[in-house]
Image (cartoon, rainbow, N blue to C red; front, side, top):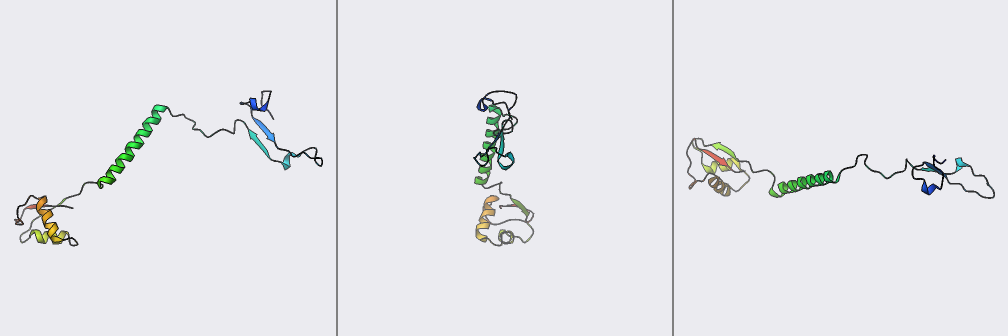
Length: 138
């Protein structure tokens, strides 16, 4: 079956064509279509393409947004995620930096944590007073 155009099959780009592959032999001079493979070419056989073409400027913008988001994500991961959160504690009567450090950081070296607390609060000595608010580094 050939569409509305006449001529050679290779020159009819717009027509729909059906080809039948037949094995004609002396035993079967008239081929039977039902036994053979039939395939169609034409409108139904096209390369996969988007129905809507993306303009070059839009494609460039999409690539730039993707590159920016990947770069930002990698920068956050390389930097270590979000900023460290500092908690605060109000010093109670009888508290010392050592007892606060031991209570807040039970698995860490207390001496290192005492130095961290002193550095975070700009203390020159481990002496603290009741009612004072201390920042505790994460």
